[in-house]
Amino acid sequence: MHIDIRRQTRLYYAYVALSNLSMISVVMSLYLAHLGFSLYQIGILLGVLQVGNTVLEIPTGFVADRFGNRASLIFALTLQMAAYALMPLAGALPAMAAVMVLLALANTLTTGCASAIVTNALLAEGRSDQLTDLSARSGVIFYLCYGVAALASGWLSEQSYELVIALSVACLAGALAAVALMREARPGGEKDGGARPIRVREAARYVVSNRPALYYALVEGAVAWSMVPVDDFYNNYLHDFLGIPLPLVGVVVAVQFVAASLAGLLSSRLARHVPEGLIARVGPVATVTVFLCFALAPDPRAAIALYLLGLATFRLTNPVRSKLLSLGVDARFRVTVASFNSIAISLLSAVSQPIFGWLSGALDMRAAMVVLMAITLVLLAAINLAFPDVTSADAVKGGN
Image (cartoon, rainbow, N blue to C red; front, side, top):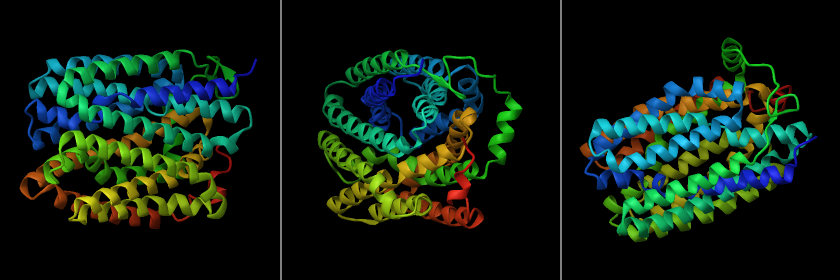
C-alpha cells in the first residue's frame, strides 16, 4: 500500500501554512522590547536560542532519523506551544532565557522533519523531478502566511501581545493536527517504522564525509552570520531606526513577503535556462549583496524596495539549492544533514546576535548590518574557493 502523494502534499502545505501563521515569531524582538529588555539583552536572549539550537541539533536530528520524523514533529509542536504560553510569565532575563532553551529544543526537533516526510515519499515513488516545485510552492505558502501573520500582528500587537500569543498557539495546534494525519514513508519504501535504526557514529561519519552536505552547511552558516540578526531585528529597524509606525510595519512586512513569495514560482523556469549548480553557488552571494545595498540605503522607501528584492532573490534561488542538497544525500540521513546545516546556522548566529545588538547600541543598526554582511561575503568567497565542484551534476549523483 503506497502513500497518497496528493493527500500527503496537501497536509504538508497545511502544516507550512498554519505553523507560519504563528504570529509571535514575527514580532518576537518587538515583544521582548515591550517587556523591557534592551537591544543588548534581546541579542543575548536570541543568542541563547541559537546556542540551544547548536547544542541540541545533532541529538534531535538523530532522534528524528531513528524514531521517525512525524513523532519528532508532533513533540516539537507541543513544546513550541508550551514555550509561547510561558512567555508572558517570564519577565526576567533568566526566566526568558529558559523559555528560549525550550524553544530551541522545539526548533531542533522540527528541523527538516516535515519536508523529509514528503521528500521521502516523492523519492520512493520516483518523482524527484517534483522536488523543486515542492520547495517553491511551500516557499510561496510560507511567505504568504508569514506576510499575513506580519500584517495581523502589526495591528494586534497594538491591542495585546497576549492575544497574539493565544492566536499563535491556536495556529500551532492546527499544524499539529495536520502532521498527525500524515503518513511517513521510511527510507527504502517502508511506512511508519520498520527501517533499520541509524547508529550515532554511522550518521556522524556520513555527514562529515559528504562534501555537498558540508558545503551547504558552511554556506548556510555564513549567510546566517548576518541574515539571522537582520531578519530578527528588521521590525525594530523599521520602527525604531526608520521611524515607521508599528501598524504600518506590519503592512510593509506583509506586502514584502507576499510579493517575494511569488518569485519562488519562477525557480523551476530559472533552472531550465541556467545550470542548477551555478544558481546554487551564486544565489547566496547575490542575495547578501542585495541586502547589503538595503542596509546602505538612506531613504526608507529605497530600503524597503531593496529588502523586497533581497527576499525575491532568495526565493528564486533557494528551491534549486534545496533540491540539489536532497539529491546529494542518502535518504536515511536526510534529517541529520538538515540538523548539521542548522548547527552551522545556530553556531554562527549565536555569536553574531549579541555582536549585532552591541554594535547597534555602540554605533547604530545600519552600521551593524553593514559590518556583518561584509563578513558574510568574505566567508562565502572563501567557501566557494574551497569547494569548487560540489554543486556540479556529478556531485549530487548517488545520494539516493
